[in-house]
Image (cartoon, rainbow, N blue to C red; front, side, top):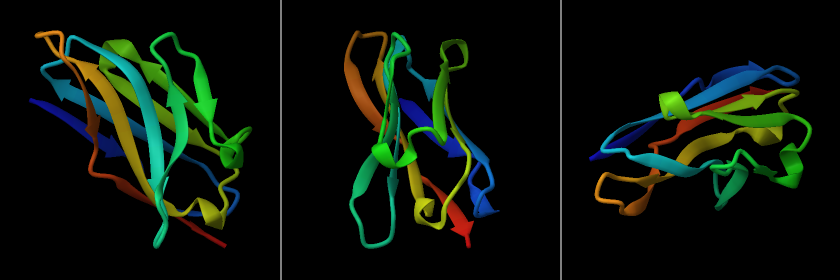
Length: 120
């Protein structure tokens, strides 16, 4: 069994900052890609940022220069530092991890999501 849990969301004023964290626990041999996605009301879930096992990163155009994704492999944790937040960043943010278990089987795991609200 694997669990993925997000934390750090909340309400912030436009221009402010938040740091999201996501930690995985359970039957984990290693973690490949780690990513953050978000879903605004009435919209589809979209990629925000991705960090590969080699620490290369990928960002949605809308967050480039404002958000930074990082990972701590020893803690099975991925972070999303969000600066210069805008009202349009308001969404439920989801963590996704591609995890290899001790049977050497890879699977994707989603957290339950955490709400980020940016007020104008």
